[in-house]
Amino acid sequence: MSKTIYIANLPVAIGEDQVRELFSVYGTVHSIKLIQDAAAGTRGGYGFVEMDEEPADLAIEHLSGKEFHGQPLQVNQARGRSSR
Image (cartoon, rainbow, N blue to C red; front, side):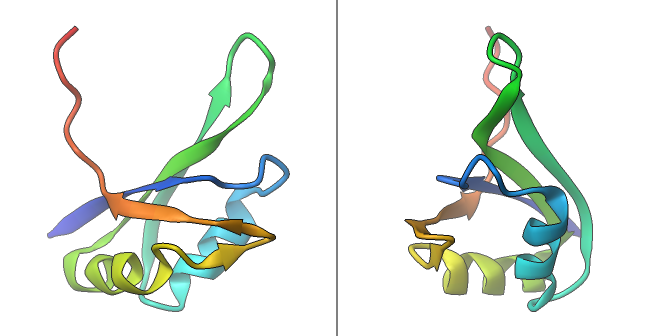
């Protein structure tokens, strides 16, 4: 079973390859989605990583608050979308 991880406070210059490298230490990364700010055309500094449940829990535990390219990461289990 897979788990989706929310990751925030990403430096805007970071790409999927760097995020994959960071998370793959804990297990296989199934997907990465870095969110773009449509109005500005730049990355929004957050995104989502999908991994198997156990490696995802390890990644959350070890990466939350860790400094990454000069910024402390916010890493949690993603919550479902609320209805708008």
